[in-house]
Length: 380
Ligand code: NDP
Ligand code: MG
Image 1: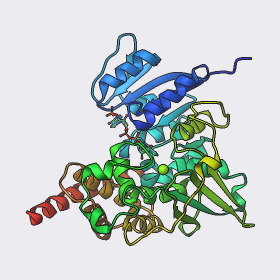
Image 2: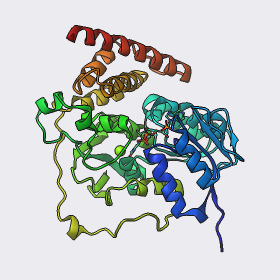
Image 3: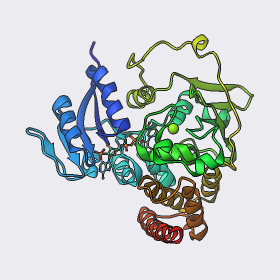
Image 4: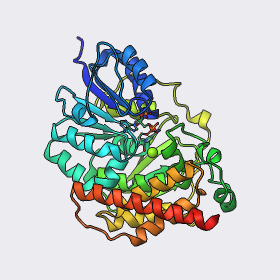
């Protein structure tokens, strides 16, 4: 008997996660019907995707039109369409937050790749999801791993998030300080969008993931550990109160967590490069993260523990600094210094509304850009 197709929209379909999601959907074409695809400025790719997958609606930040397909006005319009069973939020940065909230208000389940949504407004998003009976299934591989490990969350003692360590794991601090954009973008395990790749080099990505885990699973920060695991085979683990540790393993591929999140609770044979073999992997290494070399992790713990708009500030300052690094304006190490400075200046609002979150986000970005400009002038 044929099962009902799951109606899905992908916001951020032209990005790294979005394109891999479409590969999964292509493989599982009898399981999905695409309602909408949306992207930013890569309208060429969006058009190709629309022609191939024939969604009912498209949206792009840069105006786009495809014959026979309706163009909608906003991501929010897509996320208000109750025909959707699930929406994959795969845009990067703060633009993920409002559409996610819209989907939740409309009772639509979420496959969440966009971690910034939870870093900026985790308390509000998770509360609303609960009130509306909406499932949020994480795409981020570590959280997806934890999601798969948890059977009874009340018996879990702590979460153990693995980190590949990025391209500078065994390089000197000096190498890291002088890293070029190219070196920072050369991630040893994952091919991802530029922003998250730089975050993986500074390990801020891990910091954001700690905050993401806190919100998704409701654990205190002192119950969320990070361990460096360069092979990226153990995607994360949990420890139960009785000392049993359950980990989720797999070959490093984002197809697997993306597929898990959009098909949950079902599983299908999807894109699997080959069968898993412990013997072929041969060894799995683990080491303590070096918080002195990667201070961004500490900064994120601190922001998380402070709560309120501290994580909004962390996210906004870091993102602006990453953009400045990608533009060749600052060095990799400045990202930490700039973010730490913005954090120290920030006056935290403990229980912000969404409007206050966006106001803080805007203000911190403005201050960060101003600070970066001064920094550049000083160096000249
Ligand atoms: P990319 O930069 O590759 O993709 C971002 C997507 O967002 C693109 O489709 C882009 O469109 C779209 N976009 C940008 N601006 C707008 C806008 N104004 N309106 C609509 N769409 C817009 O990022 P990734 O795929 O790497 O990451 C996406 C999210 O997933 C991030 O939050 C990241 O942290 C998270 N994530 C990613 C992982 C990965 O392996 N890549 C792993 C875990 C989490 P366009 O290209 O057309 O401009
Ligand atoms: Mg991750």
